[in-house]
Image 1 (cartoon, rainbow over the protein chains, first blue to last red):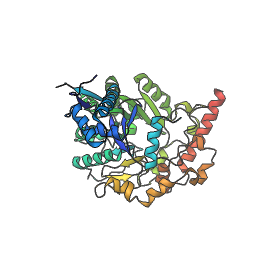
Image 2: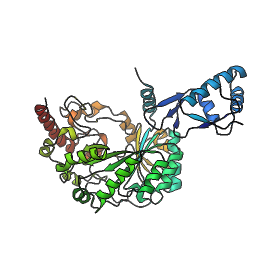
Image 3: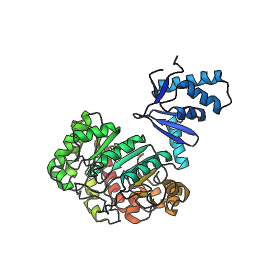
Image 4: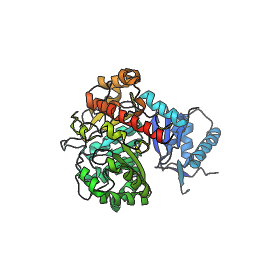
Length: 94
Length: 345
């Protein structure tokens, strides 16, 4: 399980474009492609190479009416998916 | 069932978002190809600042793919900076080049900017033919060196030829050369008029009889009986919908072949040109249906024809008309195809 002190970094080899209400990730090679819904896009936009996961979690709780416990579980699941797909990686933990 | 990619492509199409752009960064070129459609244009090319702004606008539009073309892109001294700007906005880049100005340094620049593919003109299987058509002594040897460098560094290479009267005998040898170099090969038999509609250079194209003598498996993607014929004449296309072309001076076209200026990025935003206040020509193009190309719609030559709205526009000024040059080539190609079928049933 990733620590809430980890700092996620965007993988620049993806072209990320907002098409209507979706955020689309085009992979650098091949036909790989992923889409994010509104909440996914919100989390993506908070990943700036500086914020730690617990700070991103605070942003989510501020923006959406959701308990911190549920938001944390969903965020970690989402972050884990992004990492698995190679869309993000992590800076060293503090 | 539709794939996610199909769904995304449909979104681009429905919202008329530019997905792919071909950007001619300069018309300057060390070569002077006998069949080039470009005229000598003024040198007031977009500056680096203007290009940076253009890339930002394209990124915000949703554009993913940019082809950087010329002329010869490396003729611009600031082309490394252009590559860097494009990479910063995370476009997927293809370079369209003569291959005459690529050495180790340029390959490293391309790698750094994540250029995925390089398309290079091949106009003969040897230096005599290639250099003569390009009117550039030494072009062939430079190009071969570039191909080897690019391939060895993992960059995809596609050699593209236009089959002319001057090189038609070498079509099989050019295909063989590409195979030996372990890179892709694509041939085209259409010669486009010049950008001002002057059709004189189309005299360099093959006659019907000459096309009939070609091996159809070497033309386009390989016209082999039972395959590829679905890719026939393009009566209506994504020009002006998900595709655009941009000149070195910032003129915006529906596609780089369909060179009708719908605006200039120097005095209007891309959003204004493409979405908010489209030129009536662009609006008509977007509504154009295959049936509107009435003469071509039911033509028996359609599977063998490669007319497209852009080529027809250059030839006749009307996207709905037949392309006289394409009709000639299609007749020859149908004969070549039928002869091939008789030989290899």
